[in-house]
Amino acid sequence: MTAETDPTTPQTTDLPASLAEIVTDFAETDAGDRLQLLLEFSSELPDVPERYADHPELLEAVPECQSPIFLVTEVDNAEAGEEATVHLHFSAPPEAPTTRGFAGILHEGLDGQTAGTVLAIPADLPLRLSMTEIVSPLRLRGMSGMLARIQRQVAERIGKITAN
Image (cartoon, rainbow, N blue to C red):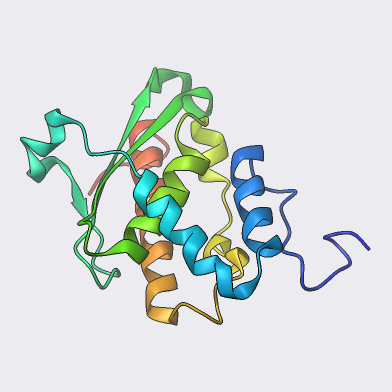
């Protein structure tokens, strides 16, 4: 049985390899250990670079998250459009490990990808992490909010949409 025919295995064929591996790791981890895996991503989230730590107004808040989290995307060679390289930066407090974990997943899975790849990430990504039984829908909505902001910022930076 393949991921496409097994309803318990999340689809990964439409994800970049780095993100597909994360989704698969969560699916293959016992439900009781998934929270621990999420906490590992929390501890691996890099600190926000000084250029943003010194200027927090450059970061965008994610109000869908229950904890205060801020993010910003950078796009190298934006004139390359969808071939430009995306870098993600997050500011999330250590006392918000679930939120930091979701940010860590997005960082690990999307940092260094092309703009086209980031823009093509499906909105149901948070549901594919096999966390619906152990994390509240509000927390999953927070991750959806992060992804939506990342995609909007990337689209703005490569000129696919104009900033408001």
